[in-house]
Length: 123
Length: 107
Image (cartoon, each protein chain N blue to C red):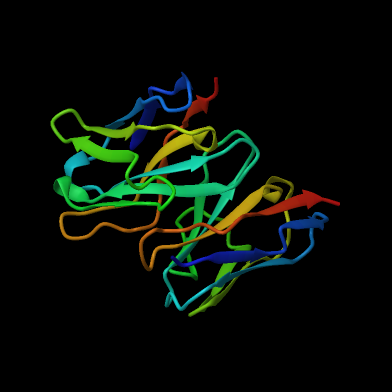
């Protein structure tokens, strides 16, 4: 069974940094594309970032480019999101998510989601 | 970046009604569109991918159609558990944007 468990959220001051983690289990983590999606309180979903399988290319939303870094540790089955220079508008629940993959192909559609971790940026 | 605009943003309907939600893309995305359902306090749930393919286990009252820039999600006969917020997402290009959401409420 695919499981994704986020951690690392909390309260941080504007300009501060935070690193989120997503522990994955139940699948061969290294061959899956992995994504972060966030949702500000009472607002809609916002795609944040993706890292391709096998530590491949990374992609970012314009709103976080240059401030956030997505990475993965395939030996630990863990996805990360390093968030720097945080702003009030980064306050959100951050979800990690993935699609279905096999050795040849990864679906871009997000079949599996974690429960989310809340990041609050406030002084 | 590709913008997705959903309409309506809010929809009030009754159990048994047929409802349709539209998602319009700012440029052509082929059929590379998904629909998600989200209940309050929960993670989103994938309903439809490739614009019209029902994910395994999703009830057949849900259907999707469209290609290019205009897409629809239809629920043929609303059930109580369908009252939630629905999002479209394009996966044709990066960034993989979502629509702003459509909140479906009980009339």
